[in-house]
Length: 95
Image (tube, one colour):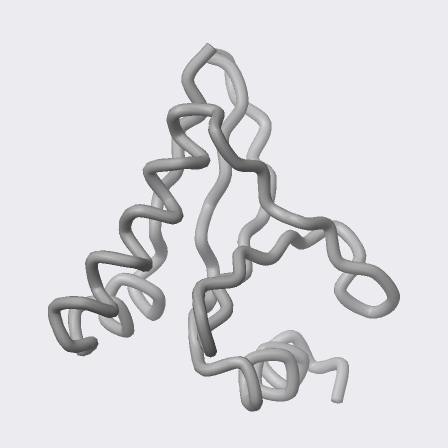
């Protein structure tokens, strides 16, 4: 069964700002999830319930979405690894 992956505004804008080779790698990682060739890694602690996808020095944070037509993920945040968890925790009001 195919997995649906959607992007919120922030990760979409982040991906679009990247140079072509980085943009291609980020998109390929999401397509691999859609095809069922990869699965995002679950996060723990304060970010329990979210998932991550690693692409070089970048991280995309996803949230599972319940829906009628099979598995779905929503990409909620994307940034360079060194900043992604701090910024996302702040957005959630955890930091």
